Amino acid sequence: MTDRAPFLSRRSALLTIGGSVLLSMVALPGVAADEDTAAAIRQLYGDREPTAGRISLQLPALAESGNSVPLTLTVDSPMTATDRVLRASVFANRNPRPLIATVLFGPKYGTPTFGTNIRLSGTQDVIAVAQMSDHSLWSAQVRVLVTVGACDALQLRY
Amino acid sequence: MIMHPMENGFNFDSQGTTIPVHIITDFVCAYDGAEVVRVQLQPGLSANPYFSFYLTATRSGPVDFKWTDQDGTVTTNSAQLQVT
Image (cartoon, rainbow over all chains, first blue to last red; front, side, top):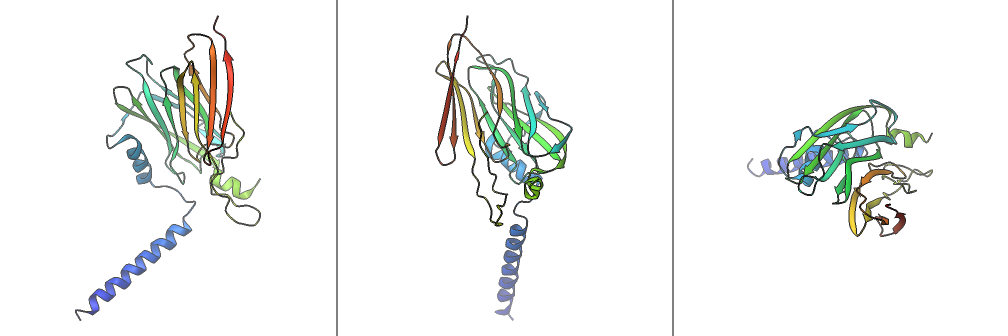
């Protein structure tokens, strides 16, 4: 009996690995979990939790197509030599890859507003994180309803 | 703004094979010898990536834009800024 137990556990371990590989293959263009977004934020900004505030995210409340969703990020900062924004990142918590872009603000940057167009795979929260020159972290979160996600729309080829 | 497909690796061609990721990874705008903004792009940005931003103009000088593709292709553009 003693030599049978490890065999069983190895088989069950192999089954578990096989199952998880299959699952990950099926869910390849799938959605990220909240942990993935948190991990992406940690990877860029460290373990400190950002405080909500000082960022304004302007996004449409309802986006018909997720292929190109206009986004405007404004950080509440005087942008002086000593008090300014160093960098900001945008995340979408249900995209296959949560990180969308990181913006590094140089010394000649004017009004701390940045606009671009992003892809959203579906209805989800868009999160922005900014780091100030005093190394404080700030965040904002906005919910966007997406009728046709970026991934679906491209597979349908309309 | 630059014309670029920004393929995100989740699309399929007519044969059903996956189109590999093909994106711009880096955008830099420099003015008066200093970097104004640098953007690190991911596949989550739309095709033909568009950015709007502000720079503090102190004197006339060239504003240089540089886009770097994932395979190292560099596209540059420049505009002359006149401060009167």
